[in-house]
Image (cartoon, rainbow, N blue to C red; front, side, top):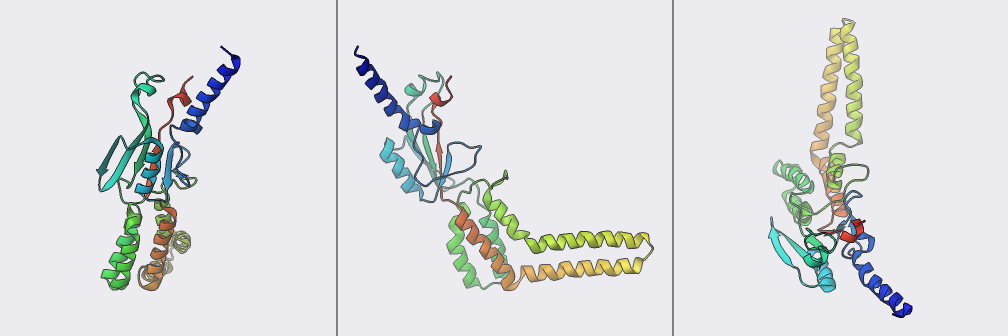
Length: 251
């Protein structure tokens, strides 16, 4: 056989296979998608809605092999390698492709924030009309996906919630309380019970004043509203799982 023909055949096969499993994956990464975390290769998040993401893969590889609704969220599997093709690499392998998910299995931390604001509205700390507007805007975010927080094993929505719940003021209060507790213990050991009792009362009043200002009125509501806005900026309505090509792990 003409060596040039052999080379052209090899080149053609290489071009045919490479795009399908570039970076070790069976399908292309959706444009603009971001990785979930470094320890979940092939998992991505997209700001585009489920139908648009699904349509991208359908156009590339055909109608979904299966699609179903789970917990009010849809999921579709678009096949890129059938069983027969996969089993040329793995004798017990099954079909591989791209899975598109519409909703996570559990609500995000945005649901907890809306719960806090609902309680404020019920207690007259926030107008019911404003809460209704917030609920309408952010309810979808309660069923969004979030990437892993940098340097953490937790999702970003959980980290945002914790930061809103325990900001710089709370950390400063905790440090002050720790210092005052040490002073109380010192006074007790010196037999200065009255001074120690007065200091304990000051500690309790300081904590009460802080929680009162934090939990009511504009200050408390503003913090939780900003928390929701940050979650909206950080979340994604669609998750994509692209299977790894069996040749990528073959010897």
